Length: 175
Image 1 (tube, one colour):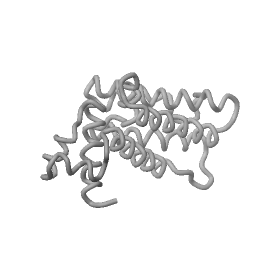
Image 2: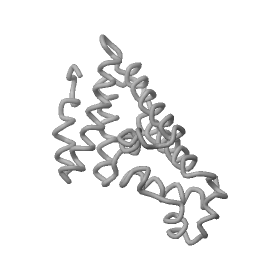
Image 3: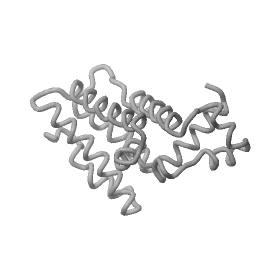
């Protein structure tokens, strides 16, 4: 992917994480990088195709940062997810997919599909790596807690809300 496409995606990702799908436009991105509005279409034919590309790239980054490690325990897997999500909100960034999921009634199918894929992938990854009885239900709960904690931290304007909401994920809790 070209340097300009990456710049556009970086800007779009920031706007998506801050204001959601309706929070960015090609015109805004073009102005920010100093190109003409129609030039954005050279890299991404539609806003939906750009948002989907940003979503795929973001998902890849999450899975790279939560990748399995040899000998990990279920508690370490959950803690790694918690750490990755905490780093995002500590930097003032909502989870891209949390934002998109909240808007799922009004976003294009292409973007909605990427959102569903991400959550299913997270749940599947957690389910396989934490194992045990009710692994899928536990994986769903972990993701729900992480996403809800992002919302609480943003609403409270404090990382302390995230820490409080996710405290139940620490250690060997039966989540």
